[in-house]
Length: 186
Image (cartoon, rainbow, N blue to C red):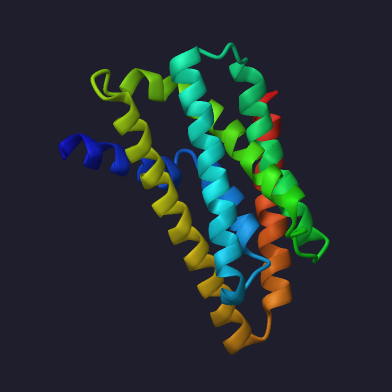
């Protein structure tokens, strides 16, 4: 039980760590255009992101995928910037197959960025349990972020009638932060 809890907490902290806010920025940008009515769709996308993230961790752990950390670290903020486009254009993400595949792929890219470190801390006696527990921690944190963002959307829409400006302002802020991350990685 200690192993399970350790990896759930590690996954949760991976998403909420102030030193690495890439998950937070991406999930925030993903959730901002939506309200509570779209909560099931957002949970689906978050789960796809987690699946992509977990698949890349599995690939890195079992197959030792030969990926360039330089390119992965560069592509992570690119995915965040790309996720801001609907906010900047004041449009919602296409809710079809493309959005689902894109979220899955972006999760994979983010997972590759964490893969080397995770390979160092995985429990060698129960790697599958470690990976699954970590994925649950990631998922719980991301669902918490989605809930927080759509709750803030609700509060801002209800009390300030400034939802459009909130979403645009947050989109601009996250986009700028992603651009800073891109420039720092060059």
